[in-house]
Amino acid sequence: MTQLKPGKLNLISDIEGLKVGNTSNQKIKTGVTALVCDQTTIASVYIMGGAPGTVDTAILEPENIVEKIDAIMLSGGSAFGLESASGAQAALREMGRGFVIGDQKVPLVPSAILFDLINGGNKNWGKFSPYRDLGYKAVLNAKREFELGSVGAGTGALCANVKGGLGSASSVITFEDGKQVTIGALVAVNPLGTPIVGTSNQFWAAPFEENNEYGGLGSPTPFSKDAKNLRIKGREDLQS
Image 1 (cartoon, rainbow, N blue to C red):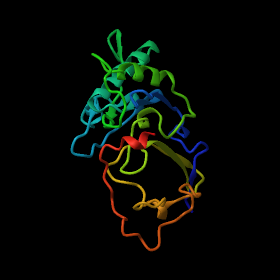
Image 2: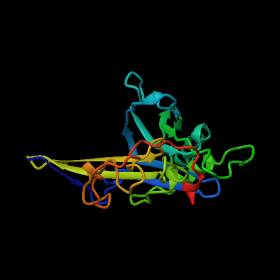
Image 3: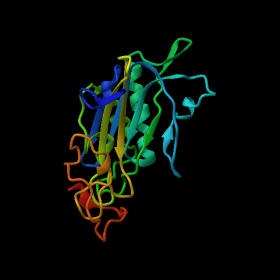
Image 4: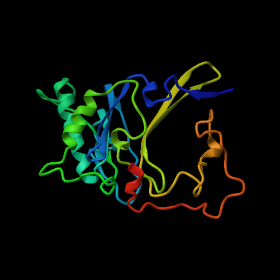
């Protein structure tokens, strides 16, 4: 029978060859997360949503010649955060990383952003945004064990009535023949809706809970009248 259990760290870095680095700016209430591959790694992409913010994701489409990447960036800052990719490229180039073209190397860093511009932070950063420097530092900070929550790309993330943030998990699948495969996820959580039921402290995802990760509270019975998907309205108070 196939078995499924969390990885040793329960982080995406349980996958061999992956490290994650975070950099945050508490004054601006934003940050950047870098997923760095020890070696160039095959990647693909599927983009959902009505207003995605990405850079260099087109190179991952199957008809294009590039198969492998050096890193992936997740950033706050909306479109400004896309500059984090250039900072990451600078750090990787210093390491001698990149797609070889003649005598040059071009680090390949597909990136995506989230919107955190109305979370109460000081966004008057002057002529140039801070995201290039944040991206550079995030790559240098990459390691196997890393923080979750209000750090990196999750620093300024919000939900409707609770704080958003950075999350990660892993699972080791053991097949009947003894072979194992590790899968992992890294997510910057910044939804319009709420993950909890109404004004309770119980999660919509409670039916899928493992090892009391949501506190073992289960689902509310019966559901309260306010059990609806609340929507965010610039909740600066969630940052406190």
